[in-house]
Length: 225
Image (cartoon, rainbow, N blue to C red):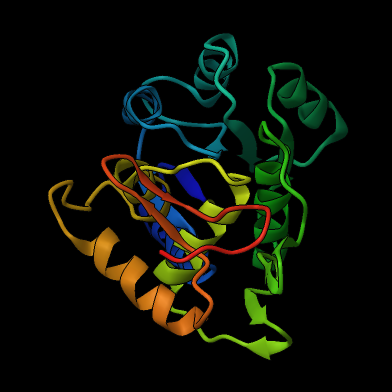
């Protein structure tokens, strides 16, 4: 899951980013509306956590821009005001959800995950293929009833592949969805991560390599990679 946090309070922005990264999300940060707008036009984010009061382009204006662009990105708006009128106004701008400061971090995580599931195509809360089961909310993976311990990046790669429903996912897309803007586009980290992931998942192999295209997890049966 790729998330952009647009928040001008740097300490809060970094705290949100650290917390979401601990939940296995790839997170970028922008400290003003203009930077947030630039990042949102370059990268396809699942969710943007957007402060309403921003220097430069306001949160309201940025929200309108995101909605009018037709992007599938979901917007969770943050504000210091929790009045009904303020929530209604924020939602009328096109925000998908609204959270008043101060907020409980577990609630923020739950709302971000719920918004990401509303992306198109929608994905079920628990992803299964054959005897493999991945629960994004609980951060657990099991195969044939056996728990599989994965790193955050391994978990993220597997989640993206399962959510693709059997379609091929390129290395470039995996790098974009699972890592953040600081990732080197020429790195071999995706290939290495897939290799270790295959070992942990065991036999029979579940992840196919499609030469010249990327990787996929077939939805009907399992195949050797």
